[in-house]
Image 1 (cartoon, rainbow, N blue to C red):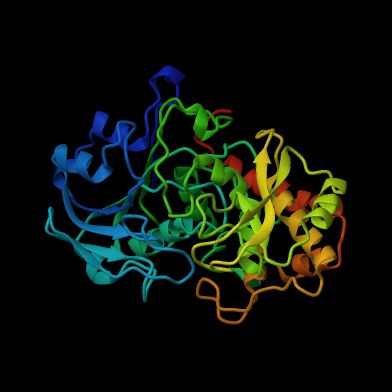
Image 2: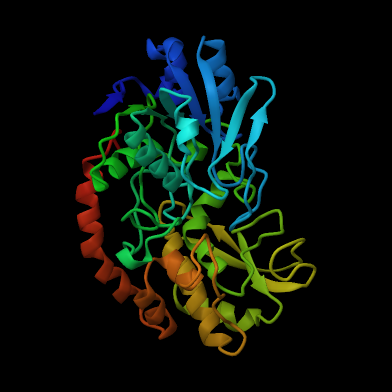
Length: 402
């Protein structure tokens, strides 16, 4: 069963998040069922009240909390830095980490609940792990006979634009479990519907949709405060760069971790800024301008070393293509620094054999074509067939108008 609790005919002036609509019109089960909640610190209302507080104040009975990668307070860094199980002392209930020895809700935790509520802020990119965690929860809940309720949130980089190749099946991973492009153009609630359809899953799913959201709206257009859902996502604008700049995680180039503006800057001690800049200018950077910078990461790659690189300034957020930009940057670094540039070795996000860059791209052949300097226009044109197929699938999951 897939039930949609959505009235999207309201005016945009009455915008409400899914968590606010849950409390505005509480269903009968909110006060009668044993509830679990998968959330983190970004799971707040427009007035910045955490969804946990809203549920308790409305008479809900929370029996267990679950946290995704980065922890319940979004305090942990990335790539296999795990969170331990804990306890919410105020509610006197367990907090189960879904980014630890297991990334699937354990049976003993699901035995404690009748309904699992999921309220997570996604960033619209395939490799951001919260949608994978949601899918694993849905799979486990279906087997346990537990209902899943997704409280929907905006896609911060719009629900109109999609970009990138579909991942090859042999590169399915924790950062690419479902067949979606890098920029997928779905809200969490829509993504849950896609997961259910793709996995042919018998999950009792209800999506409590937003009221008044339009697909073409960026997060900055909504009048909402941005609460970072992970420690390296400090602004919503960061999420617009992320679908491309995240590829640098698979290289020996710093993607800005250890600075205050991760994914907005990149660099390494060996980069010749003039040469890389000239090559990227010739490749016609679209909707963005590069500004030379020098930075010293406080942790991660090149800790304490001066890195020469660039900050990416978006000048046209509607026309900007983040995935293409990330691939163009990698091609420029390969061409200008063939001796210094390299791909990082495994492991990466619980994949122990495949190259991290192949996991991120979702394809070994695409990586090899990037290495060969193949024209990005050709690659994009070849991806168009897969994207057209994906669009048909996405259309079945759409909950909101443009």
